[in-house]
Length: 122
Image (cartoon, rainbow, N blue to C red; front, side):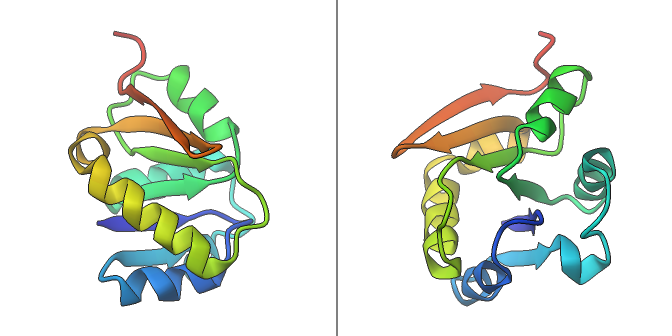
């Protein structure tokens, strides 16, 4: 799968995801570390990448649009190290691959995943 990790997530997670055979980049790798959330979503859409973030604003932006993509995974577990983050993303991608490909917003918290398919205005 193709991932775009937002600021606040470890760049080490990118290396670990690549080791797990994912295509992953960090917003800092594409000079978007200070970009607005809407710009990061646009990049994810154009480049067919799933956005991974700690930030609730991405879900809010998608909720107020009629967008079908990109999928956004919000991780609500702070303090995860790169390898832990990558392993979590790898596990979620294995379990929810079709939903992530089709377009969804997803939140991971306390070992559980909440999922809503896009567009939310249906």
